[in-house]
Image (cartoon, rainbow, N blue to C red; front, side, top):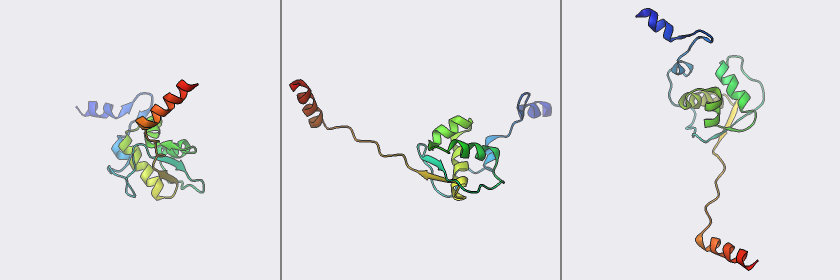
Length: 123
């Protein structure tokens, strides 16, 4: 039994596997703010602490250009909740900016669509 449990945490090619909850020290919510699934995360340049984990370094490199939290999670193949906590830690340290996504335009009204159709027919 003990041997089977030990095999569960070892990948022949990758080596030891760390459970996702260990990356966040068991935390399930970011400490600084609630970070939405579609929040846009951008790295803020400047000095970076050496004490960051490899996952946080990956997040910073992905956020050199603005990226959504969902895209980051997919790119580094970690659960969204874990990435949310790691991004929250980076935000708390001032290493990333987190903002809500741009507002999406509302659907046009029926009246406006009717006017567009009438205009197109007049052409």
